[in-house]
Length: 563
Image 1 (cartoon, rainbow, N blue to C red):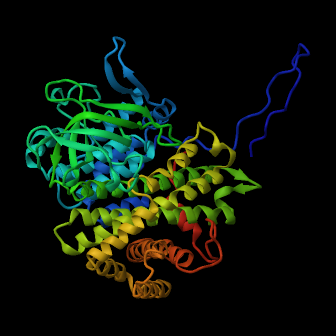
Image 2: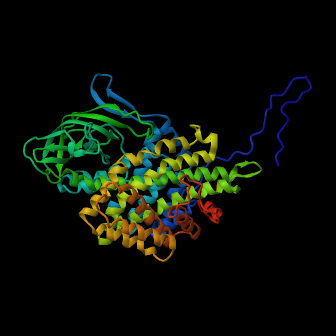
């Protein structure tokens, strides 16, 4: 037991020494650790979903993302917001956003490690799982810069719909390097891709878009157009090109719009201002006006939404990864703090009520991760009909549920740390501010629920595939079996499906998470999940696990051992 020094004492000159206290009972910084080695749930999920051969690569990336210097880059990128400059000092319009060097260092790490490219350049067993695991670790360092990484990654399926444009862009999109210069893309060997869909009057209702596309000469797929209109939300405006939705005489169509024209002149689309966001501050988001911006049509004219929907599906998947990652970092911070901090005579992590909360937070994270990496395996096997159908339905379900569960999870983890968790030199305020972003971007909760119903209506086989997958755990737990039967029954009445959509999607997510945990996870984790999520015990907040839960085992799995 450390004995604190006296508050003051006299020296020989009758003066008082200003020694007030010794700092004790504080945790060491959670840094210089391996994010992969210290995450048992991640290791197990990677192996069961088919990416065992990538383990050494993931270990190396886990060490990189856990370094103190890497973690500091995340803090620096968030402490120094992007700055927008409309013109250079000579009066030329430049539309340039300047970032702190730490932002560019994080972008370089992401691109050099293939977070934007690896499943496309090296497809096959475990490719999406490996990339998702890396993204999961990298997003824990700093989530905001992952937006342009995601969009660049997700753009490939849409760009490939227009082979002549893919021939010009794909190799540079997939290059494992990062070039942040504000120069024509023809001078670059690597480029980034963004997207610009929403407008003031429509938001998620992109069919209400008013931006018009006029043929430069000929019309149709692959042809050049000039776009006139506005975009209300353009994230990462320093990307080299964007997928844009605009109206032609035949309806809403998809276009590839570069920042520069082929002759090296600036394409006339202009940033009006940067968004003043609550979170996600290291990433620039903007409003823009298109004043005859040159762009090339991708896909069939009038079929803009189906053309861009594959990009949207992939960005929604990354929202799942990002929110799961936010949960993991919150659990790591809270459990690490409580492992080292004592109060009222014992370590916080040994106190029953805190164990209840910590274990509950860990359950939420592990269930989110299990669901996410299962969908990653589906993406690796899209040639199999079951996997195609499962990914189509389970993606909006998972995006809705996992992203929506994250804000309260971040808050509860912050409360575990106490007053220090509210301070800006701690990562928790950033995790909290970031937590609502993925639930809103790429389609908010209602949009995801309606997309779930749309998928079921268009392809009823998607619901069959979903229940077939969930039913793989039948017989493992009585509570699960009853829950699944009731959920199936509630799909038989179709008169008010839209009104009930949130309730149905909530339970679909829980059913799939429970099924995955029962089949694959630690017994204590699976049992606690079913007991707390599939049965009502009167508690709505975290920390309502029933008596008899093996909280110690759950917490041990989740706690990074550092210091």
